[in-house]
Amino acid sequence: MDRLVNAVRPYAWGSTTAIPDLLGVPPTGEPQAEIWLGAHPGAPSRLDRGHGPVSLADVIDADPEAALGADAVRAFGPRLPFLFKVLAAGAPLSLQVHPDRAQAAAGFADEEARGIPLDAPHRNYKDANHKPELICALTPFEGLCGFRHPAEAAELLEGLDVADLKPYVDILRASPEESALREVLTAVLVAEPHAIAETVERAATAAGHLAPKGGPHADAYAAYAGLAHHYPGDPGILAAMLLNHVRLQPGEALYLGAGIPHAYLSGLGVELMANSDNVLRCGLTPKHVDVPELLRVVRFTPRDAGVLRPEEVDGEEVYDTPIDEFRLSRFVLAPGSAPRPLPARTPQILLCTAGTVHLTSDAGTTGELTLTPGGAAFVPAGEHLTLAGAGTLFRATVVA
Image 1 (cartoon, rainbow, N blue to C red):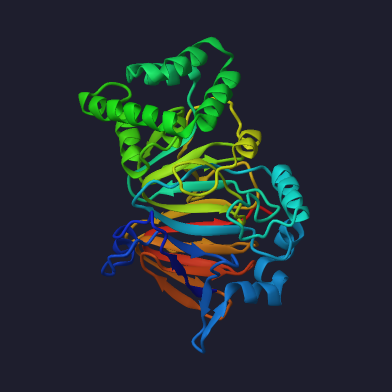
Image 2: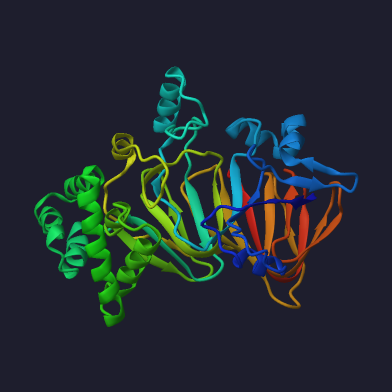
């Protein structure tokens, strides 16, 4: 195993304090949005081997089977199929969806054939892969996830008492559920910009007035008023009102499959995703919004937010998801607990988020490592570990 040195991404929406607080270092005053753990070419982790840092991507490229194991290479090819992150949202991220694998492959091939540069601001597909993802809260975490049932969305919009919203309320109450959601989202996104900005302003102002008064939608109204502070007049705020508003407590998670609209609003969490950059945005962003392609990818099936809680399997708390590219679990080690064996035939990244965890390996470059919050290690396939100490350790691996 090897200790990882990981890049911090300074996106504008990042918190200025959450990642420094996790790492136990002073804030710089600048936003720190994400720590990337993995072999993504945009910011691969480095291995700390004493004689100078080595890119994890280069280590995998040099001998994929040694790093990933034959099973993982057979299933996913000669690359690490996931990207692990610490995500710190100090401001809302864009409202977005991800394509499924077939949509991504078709979209990528089409844009390649049309000669659209990969770095073009209007490009939708950066690769041919899908991008399911899982976010697990480390602190109270706020987000939007999946469509509300239209009757509930109609009640929320009607409660704002904004005349411009009445046509949307009528559609949500009269049409079949999926048709209603599609029709309203389309109308919002293709509306004349000045007119929809005025409607958004009126709706957000009403939400801000209603939030302190309590009631079943008070938290959601407060969230929408907050969005308007960051993105005044953005039609994505009305789109957000069609979605479930959710507050996660530490240890709770959300799984975002293909076509599920979502946005992260605030909080610190660990995020695990398939290794892709494919994002289609539908608001809360100055970036490109491709409405026709977005509507082709979005799944308009209403659902609840789908909060996940871990299920214990032999002392390991596992977050159950329906894909093989990644698997997230955690170990909560109590003070004085006996050392715990951790065999694995698949590659894994281990991340400490609380306390102190000691790793002892039967092989590898380093036989022992001690991880404190924010510390991480890469463990090649087949290497057996023992865990000890008192703290919380997240484990990212694959199902192969």
